[in-house]
Length: 349
Image 1 (spheres, rainbow, N blue to C red):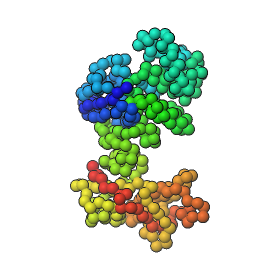
Image 2: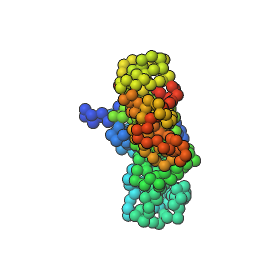
Image 3: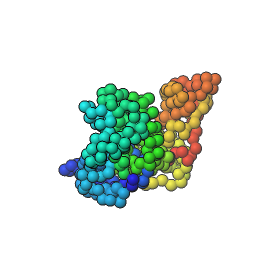
Image 4: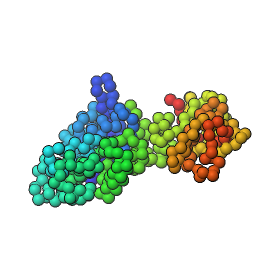
């Protein structure tokens, strides 16, 4: 086991830059998620760590050892691919044993380690089956066992749940996290799924266009986003253009005056960031806001409210049937409220 350190890691293809100066440390036993939209550089970063893509600049250290120019098989990593990449003609046990065979592990030790790896993922009774005889979730567990059996210093996961249905994805997500914590695995996972990253990782790295926008815990990124991209990508957020007119008063470009806690503002154009669940609303015939849309989502109801030309998304727990909020419909007048500290000012650029 060991930590993983990336120092100024870059990847360029001619004049195109896929990854630009990534600096990151994944501490021993920590799970860090690379999160971002398609094409942001997260998978390229993971594949550089794995040794499948050579970096253009920078260094990769595992357990203090520089592995930047080592081949993939000599990096002491275990990787789970998005497609699982199981050998269809090999049994489950043979698939799991493959990495040990390449490392010339003797037969007795190899068999014992394969059985233990399959026990970890609860497939020890299915070692003789072929991949096509397994469900998607079981195939995913075989891929996990194959990566774990080599006792990697660093565990790498590339969109490991993307091929599973929603229900199974939630179950396997919890299993992977529990396994990672129980074994103390230093883990780097790539995902574009916010919920997956927020529920599994100790810290998140938000990337866009090859650059790291912010690194932090789920709470840090959600509560204190560094810029509009992070605010809009991690969870949902109302982002309103305007300017700080007075301490505690933000004048939206539509003309609406919205309160915030800021006494000062960063220079240049501003955005007010306000999470939908931080906004309260109540029916009020004299209210200055109007319901523009109502969407019932079971445990939660979403409202779109227009106030002085500014539209706000609001998310509230669905109220009981007898609650006046349950009766709100398009066109009804309401009054909005939120704590000033919930509204953050961000530079627009």
